[in-house]
Image 1 (cartoon, rainbow over the protein chains, first blue to last red):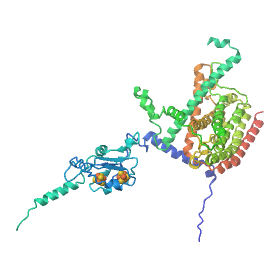
Image 2 (tube, chains in turn yellow, orange):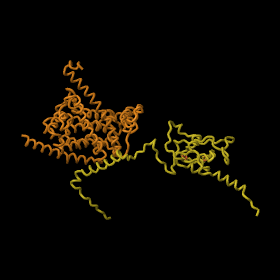
Image 3 (spheres, rainbow over the protein chains, first blue to last red):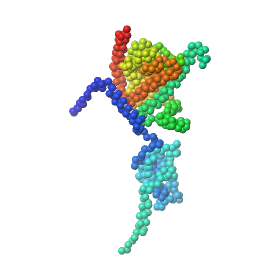
Image 4 (cartoon, rainbow over the protein chains, first blue to last red):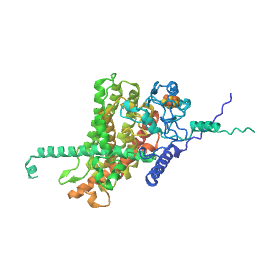
Length: 189
Length: 363
Ligand code: SF4
Ligand code: SF4
């Protein structure tokens, strides 16, 4: 094996006095000091007032969303509850003669839907698995509460925080398709 | 006030000394608190940060412009810090050697505060000299006491009975033996010149013959660098070195005990700054203006002298803080090399040369 010997220039007397290092240090610190104090170039973000801009695709807290008509999208299929790795979701289904859905094309909606934000790992599995596109990981990252109970978000809270998600309108499209099919002009030649 | 005149001299002395001790103690403690604030602010600015700017007591809303400015400068932060230290849980790990563990913080703080006793921080107010103890062996006393502070660190490391503090205290010992000698020797030329060990005399000499820093620049440089080691400041913060030893000697300490170490470090900085001002920068004097160069004749002048002293001290405090961000930490063999192979010979040479010059030219 060949060894490459790197020449190290011996330090000059001036360098050995350590003065260049001191001057260099002084220059750098003075520059940064002046930058901050006189030009106000600080990297600090004043947190509660200034907030970080969350990038697209950020996985924050999962919330339930409403559809374009303000109706609950979730149909209480409990797939998310099943898939959730840390078992953060707890759904109480409406039962045989409980609540019916507040929208067309759905049979039921959950009686209660709780996500324990202390358990949630923001993995996004619930969003992935939901057949109704009813739950989405949104951009909230500072979830705080004064006790454990307050960190369990119920259905009402989740729906309120989730807001309306009019992006994907699966059932509206399906309905239109179905209606279109019924009025499909059957042309007998 | 009249009653004071009827007391006998001893009682007067005790009264005034107690008064001075009280005031100086209060001032040093406040100075420590604000030195910490300045350190945090200056460090923040050097690192393009903002530093503490939130602590706002309830009455701040009644001060229109000044209030928010004070809050931004973090003026109330030291109070909050102090309160926090008092209220925190004081945790003693089960494996420590209790007696030493409890003794160590006290041993660190007390010497640092004791050194302040001999520093003449002003000329006089009325007929009272502005120094707590005008000792004739002031400087010897200082050196004697200051070295005791190291025992606090060593004991903390030994008493903590865990590896990082232990390494920290070993380094502290190695550090002490390498700078203390050079530090002691660096000031000998001053005594050769002033022919006195009394700090007030040294100031008087400087007022008459110009500041010591001009006559003994080499001694000043050695003393300055040694005081960085003395106060465990970067680039010689080997006993502490957060990045290698977690927290060094105070890793196991919490709450008020930790606060005492902290206090000790800053009190030490203040004492070192005061020593440097006294020995090399003429203490409370300012050259070229007679009123400021001679002991004060009025109360106002006396206060101005104290102000001058504090201004010079503040300058050194800023130097201490600033250098922290300028230089990387030395390895401890490098520090020992510096102490033993560079500074001791230089200090010795300085003594010999000064002695020769004095002997040849003074007669
Ligand atoms: S993001 Fe993951 S952990 Fe959180 S509720 Fe959804 S599935 Fe559960
Ligand atoms: S959120 Fe989606 S997956 Fe979960 S129960 Fe409701 S419909 Fe099913």
